[in-house]
Amino acid sequence: MNLTRHHTSHGPHWALDGAYLPPSFNLGLLLELPRETITRFLATLPTEGAATGDLLAPIEAVQEVWAAGVTYLRSRDAREAESQTGDIYTRVYVAERPELFFKAAGWRVVAPGDAIRVRPDSTWDVPEPELTLVINRHGEIVGYCAGNDVSSRSIEGENPLYLPQAKVYNGSCALGPGIEIATADALRDVPIRLEIIRQGEMVYTGEASTSQMKRTFEDLAAYLFRELDFPHGAFLMTGTCLVPPDGFTLTPGDIVTIHVGELKLRNPVE
Image (cartoon, rainbow, N blue to C red):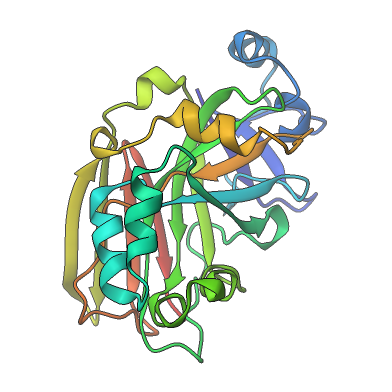
């Protein structure tokens, strides 16, 4: 089952497997349900014709996006290389407690096809392709989407305390194209691919898998919900396994495409 959110003349409208759901449907109410009832509930809903409106980000204003860092060995190595205090990334990679940080409010998330941004006060900027968990109010993983955790490596590398400025700004978070309903067990070995096109030519491509992840999805979700309530559910980016080489930085006009399983998220850069 795949949930998508679309722009219509009457406002945002959710669809299931390409057909519009009733206008009263909203994600917040769905994510109040226990995981075991979500698929059954969706199957009972009537549909109202083919969904033809442009895609919106599959999130509502009441949800937040959080992110986990240094969950893959490649990410740890990249953070160590960029930072003047690289040992902290090794320590968090091997620690029991993961790195978790706020990424975006739902209303700030960039839709598929819309522009992501690089900060004008940064000199080294990269996309970070990530499987993004969709978690209900009970802390249960109920699905996933593709995510782009756009990051300023120059700002974070200057001082780890600058992480919010490196990670949280307008245009730094994209999600899409929809939510694939799935359990955590179905996500153990999902391929992730990153492609960057500049002036019509491929300047970077790489592929990895969630099987390379050090932590489990359940562990990350449990830590996020340990002392935080999310009454309408939450999204959790699970870390990046693909990092362009040190000499690479995003520039306006680039096209970034992220594949997570069968899902494809494409955004231009400005």
